[in-house]
Amino acid sequence: MKNFEISLPLVNGSMYDIYYGETSGKEVIHDLISDDINPPPRSMRIEVKTESGKKVCLTIPYDEFSDASVTIDGTKI
Image (cartoon, rainbow, N blue to C red):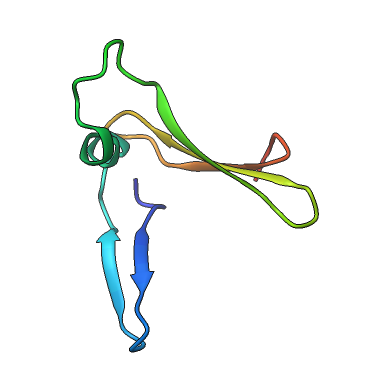
């Protein structure tokens, strides 16, 4: 996924990069939960409900080539 990164902004002003660049969704999911799931997942979803009540969903595909996607209240942006 070229459009995905996870980083931790640190209190000293620096950044700790966890995932960036050419990381596949499959790699991210395996790092978080291993590859021992049967049946395998299609994706991983991270959902956030905003203060205004909107639902934001980040979907990380379980493959080597697809990009992550975002929806707001079910509409892809």
